[in-house]
Image (tube, rainbow, N blue to C red; front, top):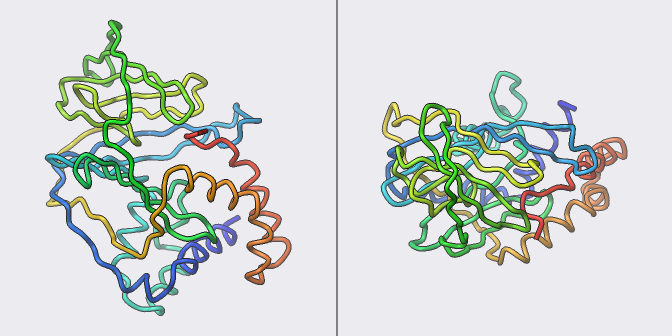
Length: 274
């Protein structure tokens, strides 16, 4: 499994044109005012809902924009953005002491960047890097009367629909940012918890703090394939179903192809179903 993880990480980098990897521009959007950590509990395989996995996610919130990213992806980006040669890249990938691996969630979500829009960046294995935009206010919230306390904060319930799922969120006006995990935003306070009706995806607040040192909300500009959300979802589904044939074209051995195919078969439950 470790070899397969390294292989997939290398493939992720290889399928981005190498020259493009080093020829990048980092756009500094604005300083982060708050860093929020969330725990994501998720079901990868809808046929095995008892198999719940977890990942740590991070929300970097500025005055008017935010960036949502997995902790593993943030660590990956932080290390890889400092690399300027093939030799450095190879050394990092093969160094077991480096905290770098192919994260389960590669996406980066920028809210209100550009103004009034959500920018979604993601990578499809052996398919390329993609970028699409959506309206910032894409969620029609219904704020309820139920209240509770989470992590010591008073919270209120709200519900919505997103990506073919029905969601319940708990937000607090004690942290006055109309933001939250993933694409969720637009409530009169920070979302501390949000989950779908089947509880296949549960984002839960861990902590929130001001940055210990100046931290910029950054967007790495590459030669992304600009597309729509619908076309991206089609391309992602096609990649999962055709992973074996795509890997065989790169000369990968049969055993590794089969392992990768089994992993992809179990990833049949995307957060956004439609």
